[in-house]
Image 1 (spheres, rainbow, N blue to C red):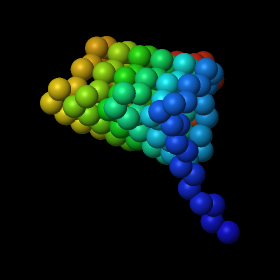
Image 2: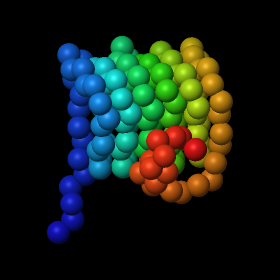
Image 3: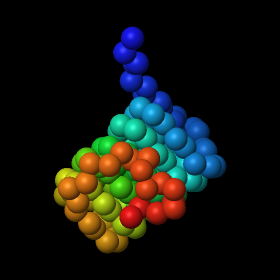
Image 4: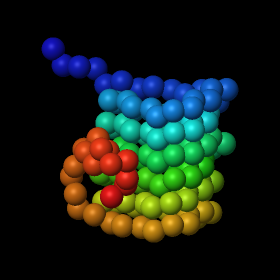
Length: 123
């Protein structure tokens, strides 16, 4: 039997302190003080804050991320987004108005987001 994809929502009135690990996708509308690792997609909505790194297949940012991102697929920085830290991805879309401060590395790698998590870095 095929496993159904999981989609987790962190509401705008929710604050999490600690790392979050999701096999599927996650939409963050609240605040997370910790790293986020997802097997599929991470969406950071406008007004939300992630004070930690994000690792996923695809990452869409409209809010604030303060410690870098690593996507095995695509990173999209929306017009209201703010990203600080290292950005590593195979594809990158930056909308007009997005704010980004950090180093960017484009890669062809196809590793899962969980690989490389052992040392806690985005490398």
